[in-house]
Length: 585
Image 1 (cartoon, rainbow, N blue to C red):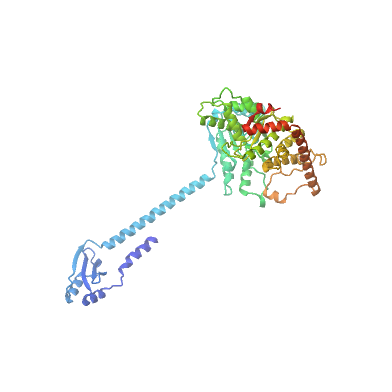
Image 2: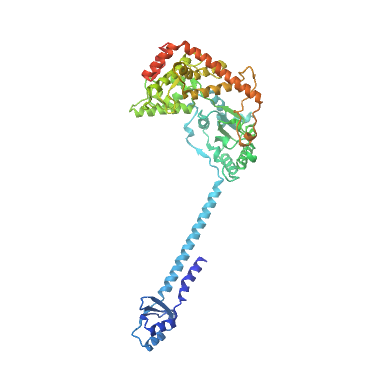
């Protein structure tokens, strides 16, 4: 249609307003200065008369009889003599035809490109429902020796490895190996590494995919990807499917506003069906990792799906030492580096935290143009990842340094005196990248499996030590204790509402913060207790804080000499270690 319209617009120019009679009239009136006749010998009806008027305008007349034109000009008394040229054809007509053909060619090319794009789009849409799982090949180099600090967890998974290696002995006894293993624990504890180590030990294919890779904006795509993933796994059985962050796709159904997310729920339903549809001992083990097991749908946790849950917790001091040894294998360490001491200092660190600690230490050593890592590098890295990089260049006034010195000395005194916290490892009044004016770092002697009421009371007392020292020594108090007060309040509230440490409230859990907040649930959620109970909770929290404050203040007042010495030492040196701090007692 476009080509036809274009052709019509070209050829319609022959129907000009300037007619042959107009040409004769202009010729008689003397308005024509030149006449050119382009004679087409092949097509006589295609001859053209080009008229150049005295006003330099150019006009064209199409004629069928050239001889008549010449005769008419001769009969008129005029000095204009026509110039006749022979052409093989009408160039204008040919140009027009060529233009039409070119236009037609462009349209054809556009149509072909659009068809190609449509085919490519169809191909992409056909692949849209394909699984995005990657077949990881480097797991062959990973085994249980690469996983430190998870002794019991590895023991639980060794039977999975044995089944994948020797399934016959289990089948002969009628045993059913778990179809799914859920690894749960805080971020960075080594859940993904543990799954890779199982595949590496068993020497089987390892398919890995994130839970969020299943869910798209188009309904049905996630379910299609689940089907494709399990179909691919069955072709490669025995194998392991590892779904990282499974809570992205396996959240409890019916928890959102208006009935939830249809696409996510369809994907979860398909996963439930696929895991249920496994043949007995088919050789496919589904492993998944999450740090939010509390929000998973109950249907996916029943026997026959994720039969087994393996808790991958934070490592203890022995585990941390083992993890540090693994990550220190390829790093040259100086003779003063004590991994056992580092393991003690890093209470609460995960495997990822410890790897990052040694990496930061290596970077610090490289910046110092040193070929190996020394203990000082690790101490600097610990401060950097723990409280932020020290800003030694930041200029602070003598008054601010004095306030910070007494504040940190107050914390340090309580860390040293109270039996269940401390001892002190480092005290500093150097500002850090986290916004703190200083810090006091303890050195826990051992890890505790659970907290005690006495220990939590002492932690609150330590938190209040900085504010107490400011009140005793200075004429005014500062905002520097805001984070300490926040921590003390949170711990006191947990003691009352979560752990049953209040005699007035008894062994009842009033903690609502632990519940998962969904949009739908949050709008309809109630406190779960009366206003009177809320008032009692507030009173009990305040009583704990007030008692801790009173006891902590008495300890600091009893150790005023040590407080003064510690503050003076901090003002002079800015940072003191354990030996220097303990020398003041």
